[in-house]
Length: 402
Image: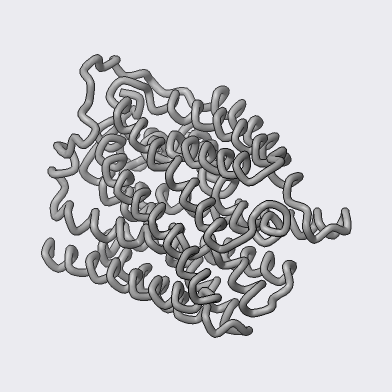
């Protein structure tokens, strides 16, 4: 199979590290370029093409709608298409989607670009964990998963600071198209690296058609229902928290656009530390306990957003960044502990179908709720509750498996 067995013992090879590094760059494309960038740029985009919170929510729903269809597609073909091929295809489609975003003349084109960015993101993210860990020892699996998400934090920091520097250089606080254009070029460069560096043995082609919701592998994971429930509940935060952070702080709290960019940078730095720390911690105390702790931190960060002033906003960004970037890779690690290669892709893909659906609904609902109330205060209170529920589910699973 494509994911060659990990080296025996504690061997860490240069090839294994190089492959993991390229995959880390790829997941930056899947989540930072297509998803978090438009959250950061949303206030500026709104000035040009978006007229309401409901419209902004539709953009979030468009992303997760595309992501949902992408996950469905990846899950359906995971038994017949090499994971490396999926990742390269996702990178290629991401470059095209970013080019569309950079040139979008109206809202409909913009939403289609966001949709295809989500579609492409699934092709990158679903096979990423198994490719990244293919040539590294199993005992480093949690660290590898944490590194994948930590790389997103690095990407978010670079994007937010780069956006601020670019706007300062051109003296235009409303610039946003050029950011997407630069990201399209970088994506092409990462695609070239993926083609040149990721060299793994191909698996024997499987010709049977895999059922869309084939839960055979997933059911082999102890307490899989609780794991899926925790992941799906956390998806409510994933669909709304950062999506509306910029507009909430700029329009509700009166923060400047540069200040919001700096908060996204703080968010990214916290994500780097949190993802690596929780990934490594989960190798020692277990995936569920680490996930419960990360969810609790997300809840603490969420409840501070409605205060709308400093230092509470910075504290919220730091706390949520540290916790939120840990939950998805911890979930992936929990699945990867029991399943290999394409079996992992099928099981994690099935879980992510539900995750994407939850995120899509949450994004649109949050926009509608904010329009109805005239602020995002209630949205972030409800997100606090969702984080607590996700953490409780992880803790219950830990106790049942103890």
